[in-house]
Length: 116
Image (cartoon, rainbow, N blue to C red; front, side, top):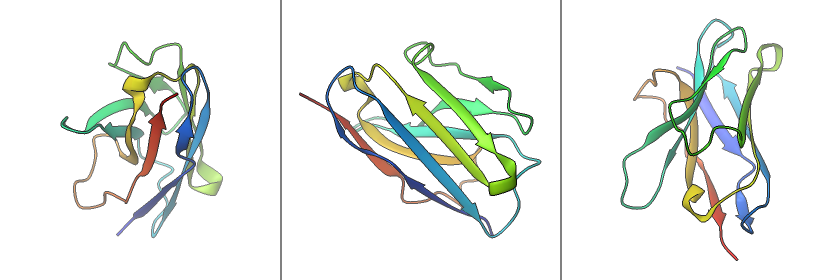
């Protein structure tokens, strides 16, 4: 069973930046599409950005286009999310998982809080 450990979250001011990291263990995920998801208070968990095994990124969330960049290093079993120009509405717990996600393998996530 694969396990995901997210890190890099924290408290930042609006307009600031954060780089999130996701370390996968238990299996090699190089052949699978991955994604970053987030869940804000009172809202359902949603896909933020996805990435194919080859590094092609996609997103259906217009609010993050041009601000967030997903990347992966298959040799290290790592996925990253560079977040720039952060807004208060980006506040959420961020998770990584396969895309589409495997509901059995959600990690603890990492909290991102954007506030002045």
